[in-house]
Length: 179
Ligand code: G3D
Ligand code: MG
Image (tube, rainbow, N blue to C red; front, side, top):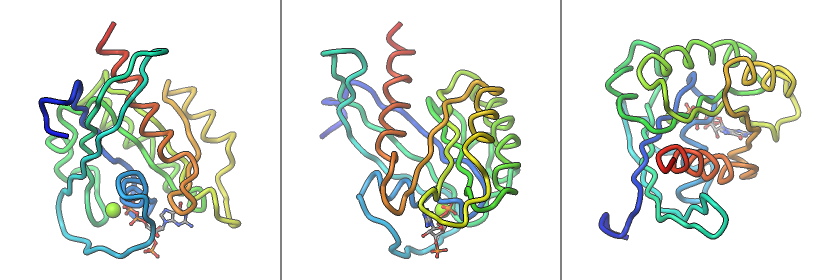
């Protein structure tokens, strides 16, 4: 699909602490794969996926999602505003087996909000396939309600809700632009 055949191009940034599953969610969505090691280069990598989004009943848009991902253990200061700038969407990921990654989501949210106040933002509770879960669903629901974010539970490993997360955010971003 070349650009001229696309109705929308939406930039989306991956946010959240290291090893929560940002890259894994992107890989699941763009390539439907999980677990392959790929080189943890320093800096930003970009993945692209073209999808059809039914943003209203019977109304479909050809949409290109451009996914920005930070490699390594990103810190808030790293490239922050340049990385986030111009995003229509952001997904903030935490690992349900590591409460500290949940606690840090608020900081990621604040930083993103400062750069992209109108972007569609989703709080993503990842690794829900694991038996050793420590952050309960209620905590994620509560925080997302407070902050006015969407909330979704995912597993990049099984694929649970991963496509849904990206598609639903795109749908909302298109609707926002449309109205
Ligand atoms: P990041 O991009 O946020 O830094 P990664 O995180 O996508 O690199 O994932 C970090 C580790 O968590 C990887 O394991 C990856 O396989 C694992 N992981 C990611 N998502 C899930 C998930 O949904 N379920 C489970 N069980 N594991 C997940 P390694 O062993 O490569 O460090
Ligand atoms: Mg990564």
